[in-house]
Structures are given as C-alpha cells and as structure tokens.
Length: 400
Ligand SMILES: *Cc1c(COP(=O)(O)O)cnc(C)c1O
Image (cartoon, rainbow, N blue to C red; front, side, top):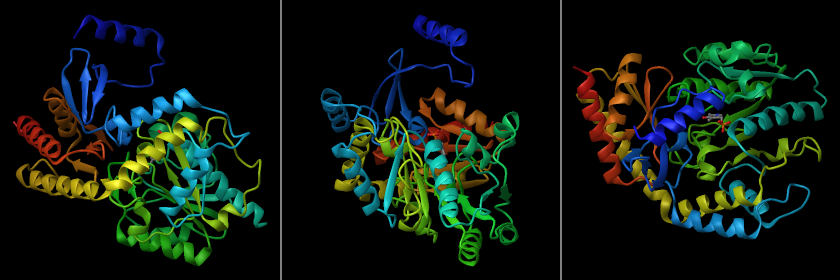
C-alpha cells in the first residue's frame, strides 16, 4: 500500500460517513475494461462500477462529447427546454413499446417515479383505494423510502421502519401464491426481470405467467425495474418483453449514462395520460450533461455495438458453464448476456472474489453466495477469456 493510499483511507475513516465496506484499493484512472490503482497496477474490471461504466472507462467519444457539452452548457433546469432531453426521450421510446420518458438521476429515483405514477394513475381514474404494491422475495429497488418499501431484504428495511404501508412480498419460488395477493386494491406489481442484487436470479416462466395473469385479471399495472437488466446488458434493450412481460412503467439507470448519473422512467400512453404538470419533478433530472452521456451511449451501441454485445454475452455464458463443470463448489450459473452470477457457498464466494482481486480481476459478491459479473458492454473476447481463466485459478485456489 502506498502512502497516498494510507492518507486516503485515513481521511475517509475520519470524515466520510461510514456506510460502505470498501476494498482497500484506490483507483485513479481507467482505460477501456481496465482500472489502474495508485501504484499503476492494472485490474480487469468486471464490476464496471456496478453495471454503470457500460462503454468502459475513458471512452474517447464519450470523453469528447462530455468535454464539449461542459464547454457549451451543463444545466438549465426543467424550467426551460433544451435540445437533448426530447431527443433522448424520442430515442428511448422508439427502442421500447412505451410512449413517454421522465428523467432523473439514479435508479432509486426512477423507481420512486414508477411508484408515484402508478398511484397517480389510479387516483386520476377515481379508484382511490388502489394503492397497494406487490413485490417479490430477493427484490432490490433502491435505498430511498419508497424504493426501500418494495425492497425485500430486512437488513436494508428494518432500521428505517415504518416504510410505506400496503406492500406484499410474493415468494418467487411459489408463483401460485401471487393470485391471492393481487386484487382491486393493488396499484402495481413491481418486478426485476432478472433480480440483480438479490443474487442474479432470472424470473421463472411460471412466475412470469402468474404476473401476466394477475395483471389481466385485475387491471393492475406492471412496473419492470430494468435498472440493472436493461440498456442491452442482458441482450435486448429491455429484458421484460423478451420474457413475456408487458410493463406499463419501466425504470432505467446504471448503464444508460455510461458513468454519468442518469435515471429514466418510461411510461405507457395510458399511464402518461394520467400525469399532469406539477405532479412530479426534479432539479437536475435530464440535464444537458446527463442526456448527452446517454445519447452517446445509445449511439455507440446502435451503430455497430449491439451484435457484439450479444456475442460477448453468449461467450461469457458458455465459458461460465464450462467453469461450472470443472468446479464442484459452483452450484449454479445464472443470468443472461453480460449480467451473470456464479452461485456457491457464502464462504467460497468471499474467497473467490478476494482471490480474483489478488489476480487483478474485479468481480463482486451479491445475494450472499453469488459471484457477480457485470463487465462493460464493450468487453472483448480476449478480456472475457482472461477473466474466466482468472476465475478458474481463483476457484482452484480456494477449493484447496
Ligand atoms: C442498482 C439498482 C437500483 C438502484 O439504483 P441507484 O442508482 O443505486 O439508486 C434499483 N433497482 C435495481 C434493479 C438496481 O439494480
């Protein structure tokens, strides 16, 4: 550890609110899929800032666009029009079956907007009693009060009670219990197409069917949280449609801003029609810098990047399945595209993440026992092979 590392850690320990358990490493610079620590050592980054650095680090086109935007205009607020927000909304809606976009700065804010818009929809319809939400075991939707209320983990929730009332959690393993919890008091069902923080858990087809049936039966709105699974990370722009869900509201974040904080809520025409000026708002949301970043992300992917992301996702999936065949400690390999989880015991996951980091591969542990891989969408075949080779070594080391 260099002296500067010590200084940074000491200052953090003294002055930063201690809400994070950080790894003792300082990254000073990035280049593509590599991060460089204070001593200049390169790490292969398969965390990408929790699925955020979708174009890799220091992407030249993004760097140029952000510098140019900073030199032109960063922020004017939503009191006025600017040319980039409407363009981004048009691009996002053309990529989906949804009709309008609301912009904010994070995933949790995008979820807050989903919850508010769902409540507002029923309020406008005169159905004042339709206020409840149905969410799922292992769900994660963010840390603000509304999003926390539909987040499952008691560790995150309990110290902050009471949360918003009227939330029920359905066991993802018991889809048959969903029907009895959805009725004409339910405003919306809220679901991640692949649960991310909960351990990279895809929805079972039976659960998808139960959700669709409950929506058809009761008219309940469907909110898809695509903050992690969306923006092409799992292949399609939105995961929900490909698994058979037709959401009325979709939240986006993480990869969409490629490193600049951007959140978005996409709405069906039906829900959008119930929202009036003044119903919701934000000072920063959809400002010029964040819209510019998201537009560069869409440009890079749409102009030649998509086929490559699909290939990379398939390669990663194939390589990880082979890895599972070689290591008994792996109980399951899950996910899609460039959102993958390797399930094992809690202790093994901790050891593998540490051993990988010693070999300069960054992966992280989620859902207790799952080693998660969320590389930049720009990851190359060679980088995928290198990461899997390092994981192979890390697994061999811990397996004795
Ligand atoms: C990360 C995440 C969020 C919260 O996003 P923040 O930007 O951290 O507020 C919400 N939902 C899902 C599915 C996420 O993965």
